[in-house]
Structures are given as structure tokens and as C-alpha cells.
Image (cartoon, rainbow, N blue to C red; front, side, top):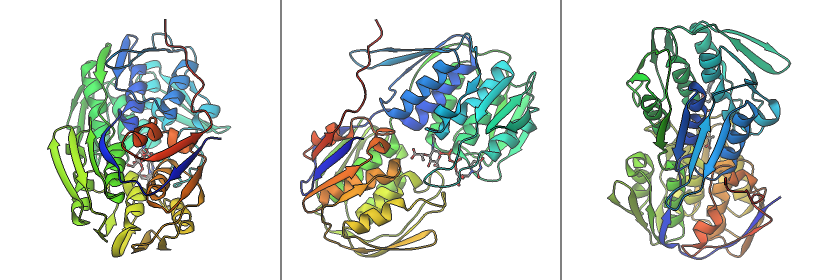
Length: 431
Ligand code: EPZ
């Protein structure tokens, strides 16, 4: 298993570019199921979860191709024939977002068999709201041998009020509703930019949707969708991770090719903590810090609040801030796996329920640490960038799930990181 060796102590200086958003690319790739035409997506990040999604679609009979281009790669997906509408456990167990094919499969082919996602490092993460929504749209759903089977001749419109705000739940039911008979009204929806991104693609495919980005979405079902070409939004969590990297290392970093309007909550906290953050335009932001940061509380919330996917990275920063702050996690019940690893590096953190109290600044010392999930890994990379000595991060495959060539990007702005092991087997570009 790959490891990172990171020598701490270098301020990050220069320009670092953000890749496409993993959490937009996944639902957008699943949306290709809704049409028999070709959907072409660009700015798809080269990360492990995208590989998994590619395998998932191919296992169902889809043709998925990659055209490597000068300016950008283009992924083409054609789901003309979906010979086997089944999301197999071997694939789903590696990536929960596989459940995003449930709604589109039922809507398009009237049947879906999806392995139930098991537990996850950060929480139980049930998909009961996905199931309840599909049942309201007329699907019959049974569960057997660890699989969900959903059937419907044709889904019909419905009035759905989510008990809890769910990102992939909103996306899954949105994709079901676009081919349903009649109107669907969804309330208490997720407002995340990834939902808006998916909606833009669906509209380009001929869907009729209003209200994406707000809590209330209205969908007029249509009988057929067509192919489309779409460029995925930049990854706001990767951008946020880089902003923290610039601040924690007392660097001077320009984070480019991002969407600054998606970063407001993170930027606000960095400014409160005493970092200098300058929005240079719609797609670039500069962060500078002299390393003297103030402790500031955060509470994770649904968008546009402070993202839970930035909580671990922010905690690494808080270990270097002057004073005491509380980090409260409201979205997932078990998202403090990084705490013990940070404490092993010398951080002063106490956890009580869903709140961690961080006292700083702590002089972190390099250590061998274990990555446990995607964002916890990012937090350990950030801590190792300021720790005294060489840290060894194990199981960085967690990181590869959602960060494209992170070590190359960080080395490009002065970090000292080495990967031990191979990332991916080389892939033959499509002839
Ligand atoms: C999405 O997960 C993201 N994943 C997550 O990013 C992100 O942390 C999360 O949204 C919250 O922002 C993708 O987009 C692929 P939820 P999702 O449904 O949709 C509960 C990363 O690091 N819930 O919004 O699975 C759930 O348990 C990943 O990139 C139910 O109870 O999250 C949680 O407590 C990690 N029943 C809360 O709602 C349901 O049916 C929010 O989860 C669905 C969710």
C-alpha cells in the first residue's frame, strides 16, 4: 500500500491548480444512464472514485471512454444498452456513492439492483431517504441478500419533503424525477454546488428543473433525454484544502482554477483566524499568513455553512492557532478519526461527543500515522507539512480516492513529499 513521506517546515509558495469536483463528477457520470445518447464530460478528476464509477457503469453495459486532450480530457459515456442494471457489492463496498445509480436506473430501465452500502468510517450513512423518495414516486423496493431491488414501469411525480438534508439523496431523486410522469416537488433539498452542477448537466440533456441551489426544487418529468457535453465544476474541497495548506505553512499561495463563490465559509474562517485571504477573481484566491493564527470555533453545516468535508483539515490548522477553539461536527456521527493521529503528532485535542476542543499552538513532531478516510488523510498531510521531521503516512489510497496527484501538486509549491509505491497501473489511452 502506498505511503507518503513528508518532511515538514517548508512554507508553500506559488500557484496551485484545482482539479474537477469528485462529488460533481460522480452524479454527472451516473446521469448518463438517463439517456441512450452519448454524454461527454470534461474536467473529470483522475482519482480512484472516478475509476470505480467507470467500472460500475461498464459492469452494467455502458461504454465509457477517455479522450486525452491537450487542454483537457473528455470522458464519453454511452448507456445505449444497459444489459445488467446491477451495482455489484464488490464495487459498491469501495464507494458508497455507487448508490447514485439507483434513481437513474429505475427511471430509465424500470429496474435496479443495488448492493446496500455497508457502514463507513465516518458514520452509519443510511440511504433510507433515497428509498422513501423512490417509493413515493411509485417504485416497489425490496431488500434481499444485501441488495436493494427497485422496480417501476414508469415513476410518477410526487411531493417529497426530506426529513434531513441529504446531498446524494437530492441528486438521486432529482435524476429519478426528470423522467417521471408528471411534476415532482422536492423540499428541504441540499443546496450544495454539486447539486447545481448536476442540474446544469440534466438541463443540457433536456430536463425541466427549477430551483436547484435552493431548498425547493420543482421537476417537470419528460419522456426522453438526449446527449450533452458538460464541463464539471472545480473541486471546492480540494481548493479549501489548499487554502489551509497555504495558511498553516505560513506561505503565500495562489489557488487557481477554483470557483471562489463556493469557498465563502472557508475563507471567512481563515480571515477570522488571521490569515490574509484575497479573492483575485471568480477562479483564483490568494492566501498568505505569517503563521500567527488565532483559534476560532467552527460548526459544520449543510451548504452554504462550513462544510463537513473541510472539518478535519481545519482541525489541523487549529492545532497551530493561538488559544482554544471548538470544532463541532453536526453532519456525521463519527468524523473525528484524525484526532488520535494528530494527538500522536503532539496536538492537544480533547473530544466530547460531537465537539473537539483544540488548544494551540502545538509544536507537532513527525510520526508514522495512519489514514482512515479521505478528509482525515488530508488533515494528516497538512499536519505533516508543519511537523518537525519526516512523517510517514500509511494507507494513502484513502487520499487517492478524492485528490488528484496531491503530492505532485504540493511539491510544485515547495512541499517535500514522496510517494512510496505506485498510484495506478498505467492505463492505455483510448486509440
Ligand atoms: C455527500 O455524501 C458527499 N459525498 C460527502 O463527501 C459529504 O460529506 C456529504 O455529502 C455531506 O456534505 C458525495 O457527494 C459523493 P448526505 P452523502 O446524504 O450524500 C444522513 C467526501 O469526503 N442521511 O448529505 O452520502 C447521513 O447519514 C464525502 O468527499 C440519512 O440519514 O451525505 C448524514 O448524517 C464524504 N439518510 C446526513 O444525512 C439518508 O438516506 C448527510 O448525509 C441519507 C443521508
